[in-house]
Length: 171
Image 1 (cartoon, rainbow, N blue to C red):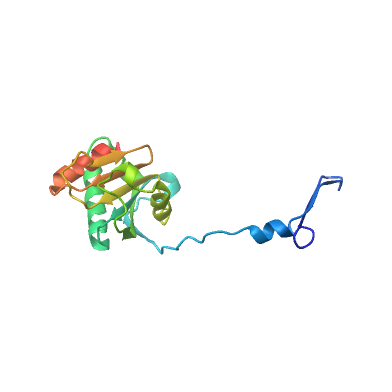
Image 2: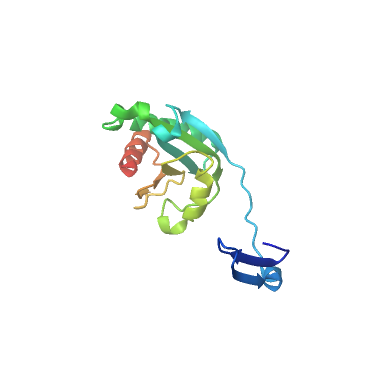
């Protein structure tokens, strides 16, 4: 901008390539401000720099902060005691983002939640893999879902089943 409400683009020889008054366009531009959610990153397991490790972040749905942190700790402990992850336990970092969502996901059905919101919430921590922990315990076929960078686990009542389900969905 060379002057207020005017865009001028010049090449290296100062020849004007583009010159336009944008004052009328600027008045019509509006945007919707997204609500800010203050999220905290809680370290569950730290084995060094995020750039050198696999970083797993747990985000909760309908689960209180203490339950999310305890569940993340249990699930990452379970995972790192299974092959091949037990061989790489020193290369994994784990985090939990608080606060949890309220009524965000419907039993891990991927068509029922907004992936952009999940990624935005997870970004409070470094991550390579996002795990959405859903506390709904509904006996349907949607107990878990996974893709290359995120997975969702609806927690069954049996903790061992939850560990195996998480490990399966994690990959």
